[in-house]
Image 1 (cartoon, rainbow over the protein chains, first blue to last red):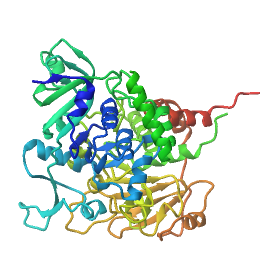
Image 2: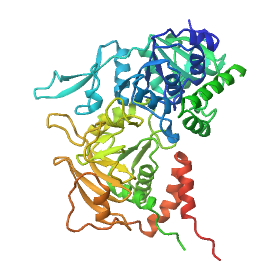
Image 3: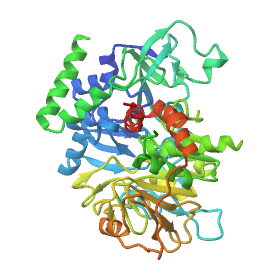
Image 4: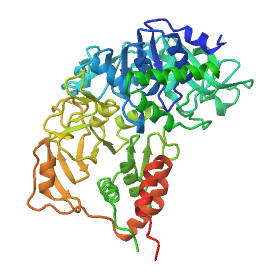
Length: 273
Length: 253
């Protein structure tokens, strides 16, 4: 049974050392949840970006909460590079598992299917592969000729976490065409969701909405967090990305002191909200 | 009087020409010039009653995908995407691209976002176009510090795709996947072969005659500044605004 809880309760379910999969910046990135996680300071995290990350991951790195980062990219989009991510790499402060987008999807899909790996084309001869001791090049068992292919091991996050426009009171969550959110949820041991609002209407009752719904079966708990993806936008059209705010972060967080200001401001805002 | 063809319009037209004959072209996020080139080709082909599909990642209007982030990659694996664009913080003379960083990995001196889908798509999409506006020795290096995607592969590696061309702010190169080498094909107006040689950190072949990259005819230019500009502004507001500003017709005195 999916529980509806306060957002700080939602974040408290994360224990140090947990492996977390986050939605991408365009797909309901859980920023309000992230603010709680930053406040609680839960450390030693293994973050899996599905398949890339931005401000949320940069702030968790800046606050020293990330041990391992698995991602195809970290970027602030048009605002430029992610400052704390860059600084942490230079200092050797985090372990980076550079990936490519389809490899993240493949690892999650393997977990979804309960199989140990999924083979993936490409990659051979790249330094992405050369730096991933956990990926193995194998021979296609069905080919007579040499046909090397890369086996991507299953990625099983402890939690998949994302922000969505609406959930119903039964715990079903609208994800629209953002199917990677379903993939994350299928792969993870549990899924935590924040939403703009909760509706009384059962989202599974209409055939039109049901196909774009993640059923409550996968969802451990939900918290209401209005504008929970901001400064990123919400794909359902509720609000757009605040590019000025992201550019401000990109500039300010270049220094450690500037980053601390950004963090204090974010947590202060969350406090008074 | 029509404002003269701007450098970005020349690049958009060059992109459309490189895409001639494709059925489906995909364009990654933050790639306004490739997106505009694909939209121009679509508009031009429509006049001949031909259909070109354009998938702009991150756009609602110009995106067919309903199966999440994985669909682009599945589509590429099935051969349903004919062309795609990749850039690079570094690109070398063997067509290797680096989207990760310069200096020793992982404690890179300069870190870029990361490889995104390049380490996969570069193997599968037949007409991969390398595009980087900045043409300088720091971008076009002898050897990349990190291979996000290789230009060429060993014969046993499954590889229906790979780079065919490199378009920069100075000129256009073709890429020979067998030889793993670039050939200069044209120089943009106002630039010279010597300038390109000086700005490139790798060696490449130079034919005896290197023509000037041709611009658009009047009808294509009108289409570009009309419909294409309008479509581009849906995904790239700031790019479209800057473009519109530089091509605004002068007010008659």
